[in-house]
Image 1 (cartoon, rainbow, N blue to C red):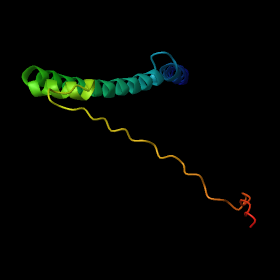
Image 2 (spheres, rainbow, N blue to C red):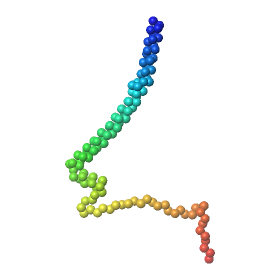
Image 3 (cartoon, helix red, strand yellow):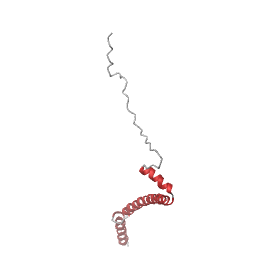
Length: 111
């Protein structure tokens, strides 16, 4: 009877070792679960983008003002009797620094 328990113990140990370390084991299960979670989050993001695009398509098909707004925003188009004014913001230029302690002062003119 003692030999039977030893044999069963060895068989159980072999099955557990195979389950934990082999292909198709617990490690692969966890890796696939992480990949599934990543794919599900990407899928939900794509579904949100698709819903937004579907709404935009419906707006463009039903409202003329949506087409005009899209043309103004993306193509920079203007309507009749309108004047286009583009405001360009310049980056502030660096002003020349006053004389530092390290910079020699300019010579004083002699009278």
